[in-house]
Image (cartoon, rainbow, N blue to C red; front, side):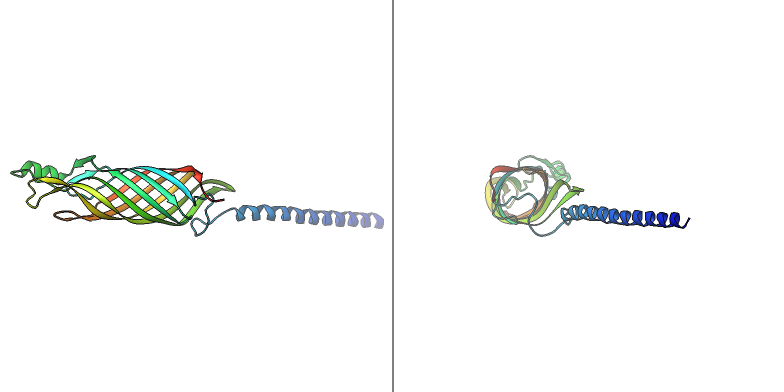
Amino acid sequence: MKNAILWIAALLLSLSVAAWSGRDAFADDLDADLDELWETRELPARMGEPVVSVAGKFAVGLQIGVIPNDDYFTYVPFSIDAYYRFTEMWGLMARGSILMAHADTVLSDFMDRHAESRVYAEEQRGDFTVAATIHPVYGKATVGTQNLWRFDWGVFAGLGVVVSDSPNDARTGTSVEAYAEGILGTDFDVYFLDWLAVRLEASMRIYKARTQWMVPCTLSAGVVFVLPWGGRK
């Protein structure tokens, strides 16, 4: 009986040692998996190098938007953009916009109905701007270690020229004029592929027309295509 008890105790001790050793091995594997998972996860937004580099690359963009704050016209601008990134943060943007698609506002309709003669207003036709860009913040969405998409946020500022039908001082007629303008804006790019992004943008332009200061604000959305050549290794 005494020998049987000793054998049972020895067996239990052996099983305990084996289980403890297996627990350590399992814990080591689990810790390694967790380390790999957390090392591949980035903060939602931070400074630094993004997962997909755009430094040294060219891109083109197409956008459509709305200018809601003009007194007489609600513009629907169409824009073609060209981009170049010197680094991940710094770049240049050149933009040409067509502003001839627009609708009359309530004020414009009211003036047309009730004014004894037509009252001419500032009517934009198009513009061209060149701006410096900076994109200091980026992030990405992940499930486990699988990247779904990445984004970056930036601001831009620059100068340009706007072409407009400007009324004379009496607002009885117009002539085509060109004015220097400044632009300031912010954009948010969501990259679903290395070469394709969706862009949301808000910008403000300011220029002095013949009879008044103009501050058109634009809300727009579009797509950006990163071109295959260029880039830094």
